[in-house]
Image (tube, rainbow, N blue to C red; front, side, top):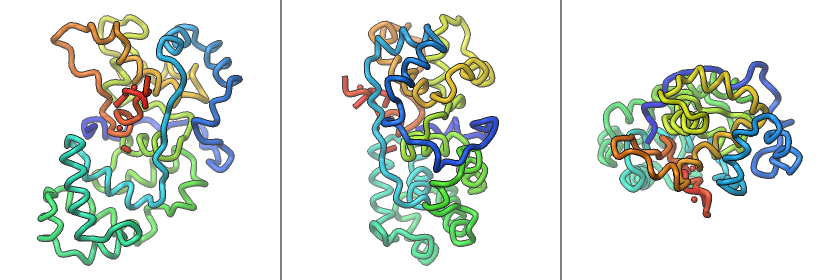
Length: 267
């Protein structure tokens, strides 16, 4: 599900911007913004035309704690299996607004493990709950004010939460417009196809090239994921690794033509 991409990486922006001043996607991507991105990178623009309209779908964020808990459960698991485990976890801890740090910490460990959690994920969830109570994990109101870089710094203090995880939250829950998850394998694969590279690019190379996509790197990322569904991408040699993005969100944000966390087949 993307756990391999969850190592700490590079900060999202050179200078943090107040999140409250940034209009979220997809509404923020106006025709004028599309023209600016097209002018900045004609190669990307040609691929965007083949993919079609931006169909990024967001899952509203009501609780940072619950969203991060769900991300921890989904690590290294297929969607259906992870969804079943998370549902059993909620039954034991609390449903909806009842799923709180206090409720999780009050749940005996055998019950948490009985939901299907590994020891490592149980420890990560307890660390998340404790850090949320201590204020290390920002509240929803704080999340809306903090910059991308500040959220990455705060959330990655939690055991089991790396930069990739936070980037998926920034994209698919908050609609932040300028996120480029270079630790995502599918992003790098699509980037290599975009530029006709013979070897897989390094994260640093994608990041450097992606500077021309600012402040719409999330849009570029979405189109990179979607590009792997184009007919020419499906004709890849049989030995190639799956083109699905690591992110459950990315996978669920398929353009319906074909990432919540649903593949880059857009919806």
